[in-house]
Image 1 (spheres, rainbow, N blue to C red):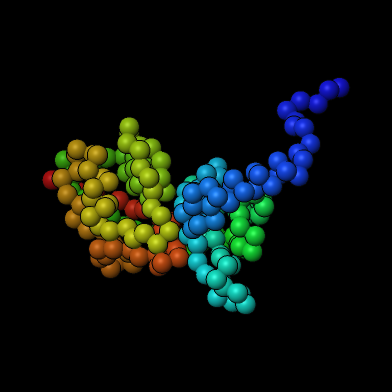
Image 2: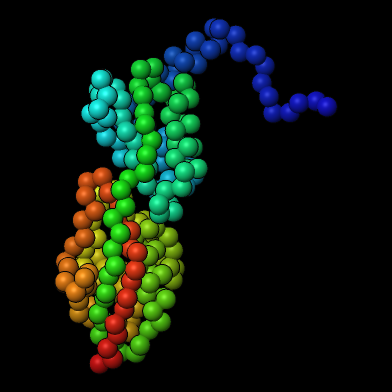
Length: 202
């Protein structure tokens, strides 16, 4: 049978010109270029490039932390990013990358609410999960938290404001301690492991 979707053999002159065009393209080999390349991979939410300080030549070697749309980042997504970064046409010769997932900071939150009418806990959980991980809820589209981004009580209040029956978020607690902000660290990602809502009708 005939083959379909292929291309004629590329001669040396065409190959050289294509490489020159790539290298001379605006931003080729820059950090924003590599970030855009990685974030175009299906299943990637955001990435963070950090120096590989254990390497002999850290200037041209980077660790790429990949935060996936699914938390924690699936191995298949990490592999796809690595493949994109190892294609010779996509990188400057001498630039080397190691791909890994960020550390995930798991939290169990208890959120106390004053409400006019009691709400479905699952709806509240779905809304806050979409806000943190990225996704849609009740016609709202949320970008999700990036690597190193904190979650504050004010952000939780803003997210839950889509429920008109919520009068006030009275407190957000973890391990019985009231919190105003959760910081996953510069190379971490927040992951809500458990959400409990205590609702008081007023």
